[in-house]
Image 1 (cartoon, helix red, strand yellow):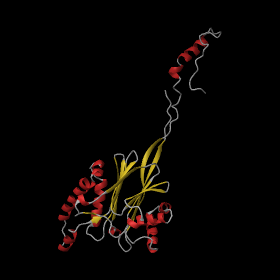
Image 2 (cartoon, rainbow, N blue to C red):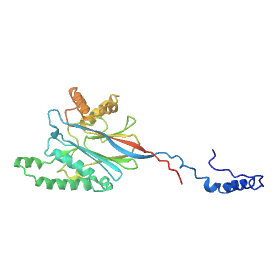
Image 3 (tube, rainbow, N blue to C red):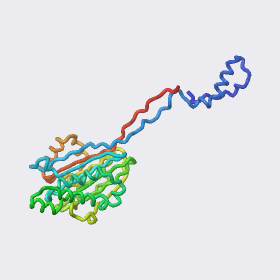
Image 4 (tube, rainbow, N blue to C red):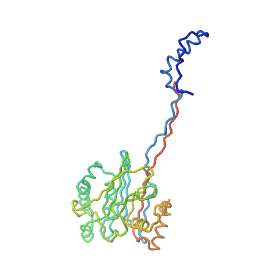
Length: 303
């Protein structure tokens, strides 16, 4: 059916049907006024709402340790149309590494400091105040002389973060060998800050409580995401395994996708350790996926 009534070119002529023709003329005269309005609103495409879904968040401790001794710490927050996630791996050799790792990630994702200030100069604007707060906290602890002396040498940890904004742009920071993998259609788009398995060693770069903030180089990267992209954040054991899989032309993303629960993850990590495919270390896997939720449009009848 035509959207508009067509104006009758013969409507001005005398009609043998009398007033019937005047009725049609009235409709024709007002066709432009009413013809644009159908009985129902025209069909509209469903609106989409972005959803940042943390589909995997698993951590297991070293074999032989209790879960409370796990020094992999992560935190996650949504705020102001963006999502922020951070992961830190405490260095076992130093004191209070678990507490320092927790302070790093918690302070990052819950900060009041605008994100522009963090990425402009992370060492000065984010790390320096954090180190000052840490020293004040340490001074308030009731420690034996031996524990205090060891603590004064500092606590150390790796760090990697990811923030995705409403326009699907993203930024990341990193120090050390905890890694970010950006995956699209099960293909690696970017890895950060490392790029291959040969870069892992026993002396990764670390954020220390006693190292001058100006001397800590915080790497950063940015990009643009698409719906369906996945961001994997992992500590070094899994990160190294992922690189080794890629270098052997294997598909690590398919294998990771099968890990739908913490129990499956723990069993899988144990198997890898038994086969000496990963180190016996605290092991964490986080996966953030960008999804869209369709919001159905309701038809409304116009009066």
